[in-house]
Each structure stands twice: as structure tokens, then as C-alpha cells.
Length: 464
Ligand SMILES: Nc1ncnc2c1ncn2[C@@H]1O[C@H](COP(=O)(O)OP(=O)(O)OP(=O)(O)O)[C@@H](O)[C@H]1O
Picture (cartoon, rainbow, N blue to C red):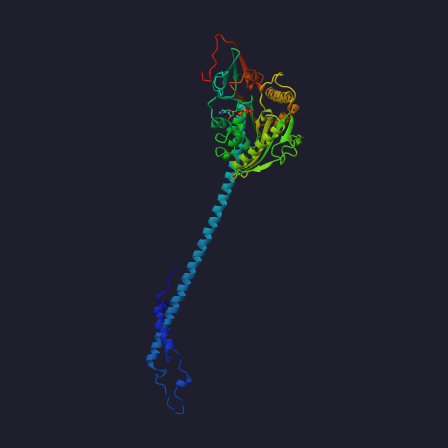
């Protein structure tokens, strides 16, 4: 904007204005009482007559100055107005450009969003294909160490995919998709689960099951301890929380004892409220099962603690050991991708299966025999399901028991499953229990025949 012309400064006007206002004879025209009257009466005022040439000259000068000032003011106003007009036009241009840039940015963001969506979908599809190539059902082995001093270990050797056990002077080899040795940590075991957790975050059903004899480390692998949490807790921890975005989770916990379902999160879990399974198309649900909404790691740990306590309480009341029932924790996870705005829904089922040890008829009788028969039936049914899946059988016998029926959505279609075979090297019949496994040919059983020399069982030292 133009600076105001100097003539308009107050310093210029002040003396002129002063003259005009302070003196009655300034620029003001003389009033009638100041003029000499026609009757010859003498005017008492001492001021000079209005027609005083000095004053007239001064007034003339002031009028000229005012005229110049008015002219300057007018031209200053004109210039300022034109400046304002220019500035307005420029602002309009800038606004137009900004609107155009905004429109372009919006359209670019839209393009990027759809590209991201496409890429995310492609990543999910490729990742799923990769997992399918590795096997929708994978079988891992975890050997625990010897805990009882003086006990001989049946673990002869192991490597990345192979475990050799000794039984009655005979070596038997078992092959797995991956083997975790006695010194494997909870972190290492969970790292192997991360691809499955990612798959669940991508919207697929996933189940992780721990199989093995009582004391072989199933609960340690799944639940773990406070210092060494297992898969059940780690999936939501800081290592994996990035998978889930701002999703929410519903958790339910049930146990299957003697082929009956008990809700472990029910308000009154000891009243054995038997639940049933309902099938609607591809959906398998348990009407009446309690679902609790959880958001944080602490929520999940608290809910699982409650479920575990209820499980122990129910077991004590029924005079059974909790390892004689299957525990299934189901997490319905909905993940939100804030970038693409897409949401996914998958179920993560975590199962701690009943002990797979064989109970000889002499040891088990009455309720224990019924219990052993129910466990044997359900684990055999699980093996048959895996065998049918492996051989692409037309019929997969999911409905042979409640365990396999409940696991159906996690074992069919594009679901992923991982079975942890927990091996206890001090268990007497470990070779027999592993030999009878029917988890498809993922577990290939190779008998090496009689050992040529007297075998000294070793403590699972890694040999190649
Ligand atoms: N890999 C391991 N490292 C350290 N401790 C372990 C390991 N595996 C198991 N344990 C410990 O051994 C004990 C028995 O393990 P755990 O309870 O997990 O066995 P389980 O197969 O679940 O038995 P159950 O069928 O009775 O529930 C626990 O005290 C557990 O902390």
C-alpha cells in the first residue's frame, strides 16, 4: 500500500486547523455582530476586520494548500484502491491455485489409497499363498529338558526338522516342520508363530494347538509363566501389536471334558452348564458361550487368569486334573487399517489339549477310564481329521467329536493350523505316543531298526 501523502500528516494540518478553530477571525466568515453597524455605532471588538488583506492572503494560501492536499489525498486514495484491487486479484489467484493444488492432492491421495489397498490385498494374497505352500497345517516339535535327576532321556538327537528318540534300544526318527530343542526360549517359539498371527490379522482363521503328554510343556508353551509368557499372551504384546491396528477383540474360553463343553468365563462356571454346538452354513458357534471384550494385553491376561482359575475350580470340584480336559481359547479379532480404511475379521484359536499319555487299563478304572477313553477318542478324531485333510479326502470327519467339530472353521478352507508336539524326554512311552500320531504325513515316522550297539541315551545334545 502507498504511504499516505506527507501533506496529510497531522504536523501539516495541525497549525492550519489551529488557526481555523482557535481564532474567531480565522477562516470563519465574520458574523453580523462583528461587522460595523450602519447606525454609526462603534464596534467594541479589537479584532481586525474580516477584509484584512493579510488574513485574506493567508486564507487563500490555506485554501490552496488544502486543495493540493485534497488532490494528493484523492490520488493516494486512487492508488491505494488500485493496489487493493491488485492485491485482491492476486489473492484470488492464489486461492484458485490453492484449491487446484488441494484438488490434485486429494486425487493423488485417492490414487495412493487405492494403490495401497491393491498392494495390501496383493501382499495378503501372496503371503497367504506362501503359507499355503509351507502347509496349511504345520507340525512343530518342542522338546523339553530333563527335570528329574537320575532319569534317562529318550531324546537321542535332534536338529532343525528331525528328532531321534530311543525306545527299547531302538532309535526312532520323527520329522517335523520345525524342531525347538530343550534350550529353546519362549521368544524363539513365538517367532515361529508370527507368520500365523499375521495371517489371522489378515482375516484368516488360525489355530495353534499344543499336544503332548502331561508334563511335557503344553501349558508352558501356550500360557507360559509370568516371567516367560507363552503364545497365548505374546500374540497381543508389543512384538506383535502392530499387526492388529486399532482393532478390538472378543475372547471366549471353554474346556472340553468327557466330550462336554464348559464355559470358563461364565458367571457361575462350577454349575456345569453344558453347552451345545450350533452349525449355520460354514459357521460353527456355541450359543450361550460368554464372550468378553478385551483391548489391552492386561485385559487379556486378566481374562485368561479368570478362565484358568475357573478351570482349576471346576476340576477340583469334579475331582479331576485339569490336564484331563482340552482348553480352547478363541479370540475373535477385528483389525482396522487406518490407511486403507479396510477392516478384517479372523479367529485365533489357542488350544492346550489334554495329556496324550496312554493310560493302561490297570491304572484306569471307573471315571478315570471314561475320561481316558474320551481323551483317546478326541485325539484320535483329531488325527483322523489331519489325515483326511492331508490326503484331500472328500469327507473330513469333523463331527466325530466336539473338539474337531469346534475346530472345523480353523481347519478348513484357507485357515491355518500349527500343532506343537511337546516331547518330554523323561516320559516312558513317548515313542509310542508319537508313533501313533496321525497328523497327516507332516509327521513322517521312520523306524531305523535295531541299534547295532548298546545305546547310551543322551540329553538331547545337538548332533548332525
Ligand atoms: N521348555 C520348558 N522350559 C522350562 N520349563 C518348562 C518347559 N516346559 C515345561 N516346563 C515346566 O514344566 C512343568 C510342566 O509343564 P506344563 O505344565 O507346561 O506341562 P503340560 O504338558 O501342560 O502338563 P499338563 O498336561 O499337566 O497341563 C511346569 O512347571 C513348566 O513351567
